[in-house]
Length: 268
Image (cartoon, rainbow, N blue to C red; front, side, top):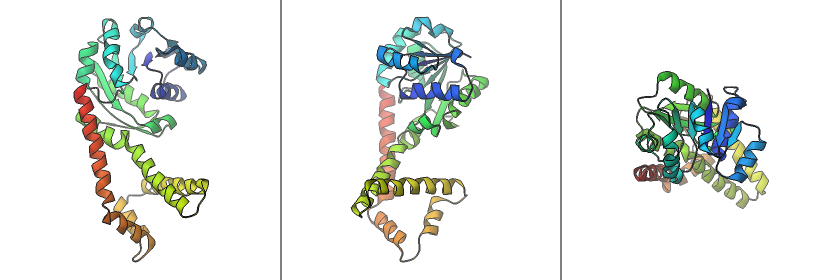
C-alpha cells in the first residue's frame, strides 16, 4: 500500500514517523507532498520517504492520501488535485471542520475518512475519533484504523457530527489540562516552591492520577471521595471549586469549543 501525506507539518510528520516506527509501511511506500521548499528540505533529511513538491508526480501512485493541511487551504488544494483523483483511492482528512461532503464535492472522491487526532499523537499517546463515507469498505476502514492506532488510541463514530464533539473534548482537551496544570503551578510558586519544583509536583500528580484512574474501575467522583476526608484539605479545595462553579465552567468551555467546531464545519 502506497501512502501519500499531503502537508509535512507537525501532524503529517507525526504520522509518517509513526507508520514507519510500527513497520506498518516502508520508506519505499511513503510519499510526502510539501509545497514549502524549506520544509521539504527538512523532511528529506529525516529519511522518512520520498518528498515531492508537485502532486502530478505522486498523487496517482498513492492508494491512501492523507490530507494534513490547514482547513483554509482546502479549496485551493481540491482544485489542484481533483483532475488527478482516482475513484478507488482512499482519502483520510484530518482537516478540522471540513466535512466529508465538502471533500467529496471538491475532489470528486468517493472513499473518504474524516478523523480528528490530537497533539499527544506526537508521542504515541494520541486520541483520534474517525468516521467515513459509505463507499469505504470494511477492509479499507480497518487498514486506516491500524495506521491511526500507531499514534495512540482510536474510536469509530457512526455520525459525522460526533467528529465536532470529539474536537471539543479530545482535540482541544489537552489545552484544558494544561490550563489547569498552569494554574496549579502558579499556585505552587506563590506558596514558595521554585518553578522546577512546582512543575514536578504538578506534572507527576497529573500523571499519577491518570494512571491510577486507568488502573481501576472507579469513577472520578469515587476517586475524589477516596482522597477527601471530612474537614480536610481536599474537601476545602473541592468546596471552593463548587462555590465558584468550576465544574460547570469546564463543561461550558467544552460546549463553546463544540459550537465553534460546528461553525467552522458550516463555513466549509
